[in-house]
Image (cartoon, rainbow, N blue to C red):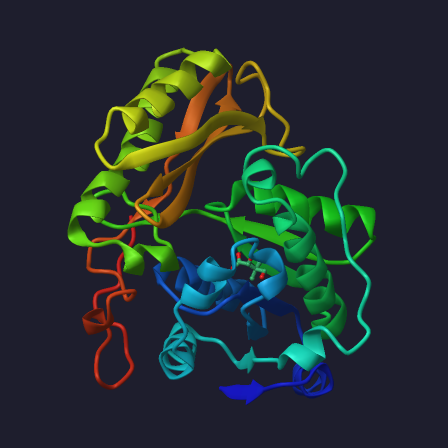
Amino acid sequence: MKVVATFARARSESSKVSGPIGLVPTMGSLHDGHLSLIEEARRECSHVVMSLYINALQFGDIEDFERYPRDLERDLRLAASAGADLVFVPEDSTMYPEGDVSRVSFKGISEIMEGSFRPGHFEGVGTVVVKLLAGLQPDRAYFGRKDAQQLAVVRRLVRDLAFPIRIVGCPTVREKDGLALSSRNLRLDPKCRESALALSRGLFEAADLAESGEIDGPILERTAMNVMADTLGVEPEYATLADQINAVRISHVDRPAFLAVAARIGRVRLIDNIHLELVERSVVVDRGLRLSHKSVLYDDAMQQDGSLENRRVS
Ligand code: PAF
């Protein structure tokens, strides 16, 4: 696996290989969710590029940016063991050259949910993703469904700006007890980690209701919201039923949708969602995949030789 810092070097490496180039954009602090994206790219592409760049522009909160976990050596070991061929680790000056003023904005689909709680977040995501797509020129790019609104925004960006790139959405990966994997989970102490389960618990309660025929948005939202609000240590921000394509709030599950939640657990802000599909007029819920082992997020799951033992998802 090669590590490069410039777009030109990355393109030159990719040009040596024939067949599709797959990009997995990350901010490092890799967990099994990222590894599953690399593995999916590995299955579909001849050359797998992972980018690792902590994009200050998408963090409204400077404290959140500064506390974001950083461990390049560990991330490179994990990327190699999951099958990446190349890791692109740019300097700030490569991503935002002096005098850089261009920004990507999204009318309509970036104002609710994450957009309203993190003003400027999607402008930051969109801007960095456009630079990665333009600079690395992949054929496919892999994103987790865990960030459902981000996935919708990126799909829209690729369509509107005519990038000839396929965006692949991959399932959320959860720990054994249901907590969605996030680099921020590292900052939860044991009590907060217990409280954090309220996000997935609320979503799964709503999922059960939806699968038994309840398609009313406010009822599903209230179900998830109440579970979070009733859990000690959880400050819910929102529970919103949205259209998968446009990420706008909808009143019923009458098209592919997701139910997204966000909450603060102490000083850590977490998000989660389930995807709801209509299959022959019934709702089928994608609750994501469950790990059967401890996540690599907690270092001791990683073997000394860099291999990942017993990595199973179901
Ligand atoms: O999902 C993330 O990790 C980031 O938002 C992304 C897509 C790498 C852009 O910085």
